[in-house]
Structures are given as C-alpha cells and as structure tokens.
Image 1 (cartoon, rainbow, N blue to C red):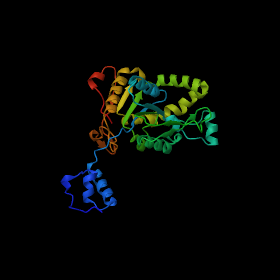
Image 2: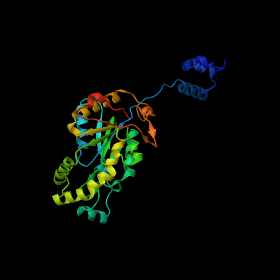
Image 3: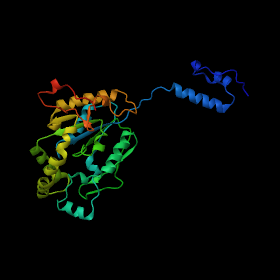
Image 4: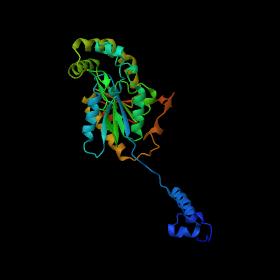
Length: 299
C-alpha cells in the first residue's frame, strides 16, 4: 500500500494521476480524489438548445408561407430548421363531434379543439433536445393517423405555426421568439376558400358557413387578442420580404451565439414583466418604417 506522505494543499490541484497516487491509500481514495478534482476544474458547459419560434395569425394569413420563406432564406447554413403546425394537435373527435364536423358545424377554431396537453409535452421535449414525435392529423377523417408521426431530432430552430399558439399562457411561455402574421381579412377568406376546397375535401357552402359561423368569431375572440404577446408583427405575411430578411438575419445571429442549457432566452434579462406578461410593445414591420425600427429585441 502506498504511504500517505502529506495532505494535498488545495493550491496544487489538479495533480496528475501518478503524482496523486503518492497521497492516497487505495483505489477508492484515488477515485474520490480525482472525482472531486474534476468537479473543481469543470469548465462551463454550453449546448445548442433548439430555438423555438412561435408564429401566430388568423386562418390563411400566410403563417406557413412565412415559415417556408425563412427556411429558404436561411439556405445552406448547416443548421436544421423545421416547421410544426398546431393543426397536428387537433383532438380526435367523438362520434357526435365527428357528425358535426362532417356537416360543417364543428368549431375547429376554438381553443377546446386542440390537445394542449400533448402540444405542451411535445414543445417541452423539443426544448430539451430529445427526439420528438409529431402526430399527423387527417382533415378528411378528422382524426390522427397512427404510424404516420413525424420524428424531429437535433433541430437548431423549430418554427411552430398556428392560429392559437399564443393563447395558452404555459405554451406561450415556451417560445423564445413570437411572431404574428397580420393579413387583411378578405385576403384570408379568399385563401381559405381555395385551400379548403382543394386540400380538405369541403364544398363552398361548408367553407363559407364555417367561416361566418366559427372562423371569424373565433378570430375576433381568441386569436386577435394574442397579437399583443408578439415580439414582431409582420403585415402582409410573406409579401413583406424586408421583414422576413431582417428576421432571418436575427436568427443567423442567434445560431452563431452559444446558449447555456440553463438559459431560456438570449435576452430574457431585457424583458420587463407586468402581471406575468411582457410590457414591451411588439415591433411592427411596415414598408416605410423597417429601416428606422431596425430589428426587434430577441426573446
């Protein structure tokens, strides 16, 4: 057994394994000694947490198109950017709800139509950097399709778009940046008619009935009020290329900056809080004021 010669002065840490053997009595002591030394010498650890960007706005406002433009402008940056739609998190309907949906009498724009519990669980998994399953929702059968889930892993930026992504306070708090796509209601209606006829198997009477009965009232009551939680407001959606280019520049800056795993936001210390919500007014991108506004605060 090696004889202990003296107590190790703290100033001499860390010591090489060979030199340390002169001061320990057995392998167990050596393990404890080296373990403590490693903890003392451990450098701050950084990792790239996925950066979650929420994109809200009325139905057919251009949320998905804005997200696609962001990905296109980011180009080959060796970063993984993915889009998730809140539409994937509609609840499976009961038999009675399914009957109403087929008649065009079910409100898909109400907060109760979404599975917020699953939505929150998925966002938390994404923030932790874990492989995450995204359900696939079929708008013809009004149900999730088992076995067709999309798996997202190792994402650098996740764009989450939907009409009510900012409605639930707990879900809203998970986003690092929040965007609101602001598009004229007539344009949104025209787009919705075309989309629902071509992609979702509905007829014109169903689309217009659903819009006047559910979509517009729900937008006024639930969606529009969440605009105040946005960090950026983008008028005209994907047509506002200046706003999107500035946004992409900011995302590129974010991706170049290491974030600690314990840090939820690059600029969280700059946000003033009032009754649990940000007291900062959102930046609104308009054709005449983009240059004077510069860029919005990161969040």
